[in-house]
Image (cartoon, rainbow, N blue to C red):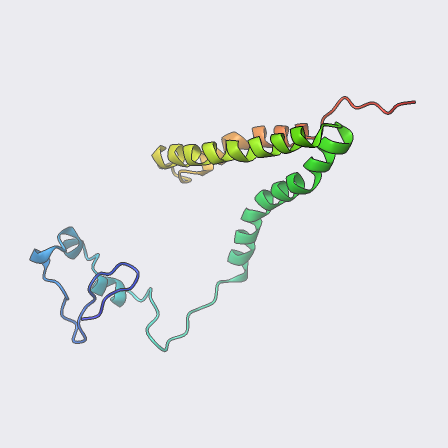
Length: 156
């Protein structure tokens, strides 16, 4: 018998017999057709020597667009916020670095908490994450523009 490297489960033998009889632990999977043999016969996994179809261009573009806002925000914060805090607001370097550090520390606390809340939210027609994205987008836009709001006046 071979073993699946990803999950260390025994695979079917070469002549198609199940590697483990139902009474030895397959349970509901065998009754519902969710066995490794059914997955191999469904045509979803390419057979050895068979070429996989490449991802269509529209899927690649959608994946790229999904990551663009995160990268845009991260690049803007990383590039401009330190210059803004030091030159425009004229903070001491210690205080500027403290602000940047506290932002990262806050992310370390809130990211797992938000992940927990999203995983516990009920599945909706559009998924679990879309309601959170829609509800948080206005706040993200407002706070992004407030990053550069200041009462700085040009001396005469």
